[in-house]
Image (cartoon, rainbow, N blue to C red):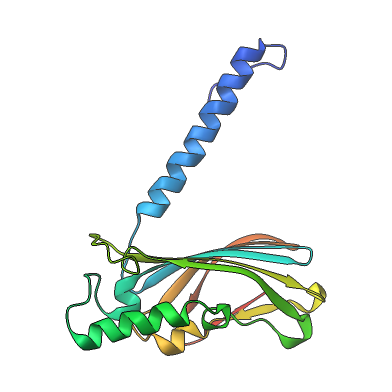
Amino acid sequence: MKYIPMNAPKSSLMLLILLSLLAVHSQAEEKHAAHSHGLGTLEIAVDGKMVKGNFEIPMESLLGHEYLPRSAAEKKALADLQAAASKASYFVSFPAAAECKEKSLTAESAMFAGKKSEHSDLDVDFEFECAKPQALNQIEFPLFAKHPRLGSLKVDLAGPKGQKSLTVKAKDPVLRW
């Protein structure tokens, strides 16, 4: 990256900021484009009483396929997943002592809308408010028990103790910090 002195014209500083933002956006697009069966991603932030997160999980890891359902059993499995995905407790569980309440949840997939996609994902955004955030020391992922094809979650966590990136595996579906 090119060094621009602080006394440089504002247009040069704005250009540097714009280029930095584009680089970050490009990296985010590359990350979003990544798609590996058996591996989901979770970005989660703990800020005071608020916990916000975003899952991206390949539908193959949840249903065993990424095509639109053909058989009655596949249609039922998709409908069951869509119904279950309306509850945050399907994805995450916080310690009871933290007294976390769900504030919002959206779960979207092209398959839910009946649209064909080469690589279908389930995208889940959630937000909780915790009355006692000091009791937040872990997150459990009940999702693993329901979907054996999901082997791991790559988690990017930002919280009061800093940032970290780690992997949570199905055999130990708990993120501790």
